[in-house]
Image 1 (cartoon, rainbow, N blue to C red):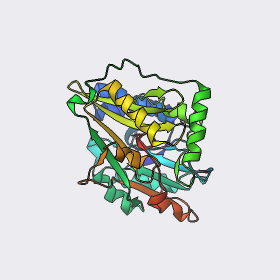
Image 2 (tube, one colour; image 1 turned 120 degrees about the vertical axis):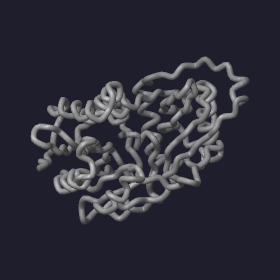
Image 3 (cartoon, rainbow, N blue to C red; image 1 turned 180 degrees about the horizontal axis):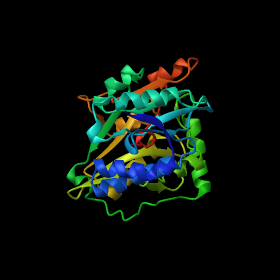
Image 4 (cartoon, one colour; image 1 turned 45 degrees about the vertical axis):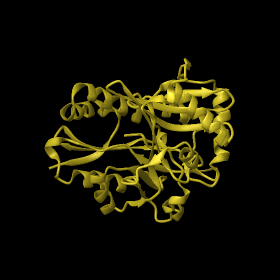
Length: 313
């Protein structure tokens, strides 16, 4: 018989034991770093399922800073599900999610998340609605793209608070009227402390910065763009920033996950970042937690998220 309850950071060793059972040693450290980050969120909520004293499933979530028209939206973002491999197909996915929904904090209006294809049906049965318009864009870089480049600039890990405040403040004006992540300086810094998905920063002074990460496979690099923070909403500045970053890192391809109503979506298209038409709309789902929640959260034309906002699992 399973028992389901809310757990906190005191259960980190139980979580580690579950990770150790499901994954290899290196991956355990990778995921444990993720949960250290989750526990540092001031609105985290984690539901655990136990058989006796053994943790067998997790339903973690974090509070997320979404905003629209300068008004903060109170919500959770789900951040992955883990079920002990010996207890799969026993309804733990549904049971932990139902418990989470029933015990969500009264201030929280809704939940959003990206899900894999196999989980989508389960979420839909629990009331999730899936929105179109969230795509993966990819740019393949030809081998001669970097021949003229001798760029030796280095990525940085932080910039001055004064510069950062300017970029973040200007971003709010550019995203007016859209549902987007409100990156104040504290939330921005917390977001980048996740060691599981370690991001780099590339900046051109007085133009903007790119938050990105590198995936390396057999000495070939994929550059994943998390988000771009421009001082001014200018295609010229966007193009300058992206081209300089690509020439510095020399990836074989670059990707970004982004809503089509994001202010920079068409800028990516102009730089030949192409959607995958065989898997066009990715699985972005929303679940209301209050009856009086605004219907605007189900309007896909209002969402303006990018990779950095959703790379949390």
